[in-house]
Length: 69
Image (cartoon, rainbow, N blue to C red):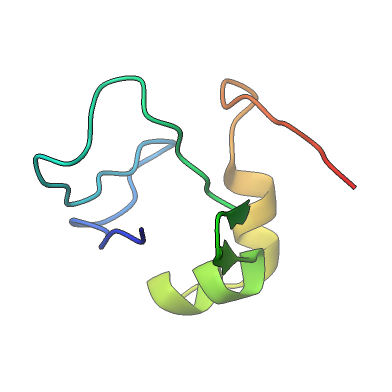
């Protein structure tokens, strides 16, 4: 399920609006697929008013990556 960004991205922190259906430990997908939902870096950039390069270089190394073919 997609979630709305709450406020501005600040440094390497983003806050999203959630409801009671979200639990601590739930998986979050920033870029890629989850079930039938998909978002790529270009779509994310458009949603927050920036460019794709800024999205891809702005995700800090503290965020785990899982690469799949």
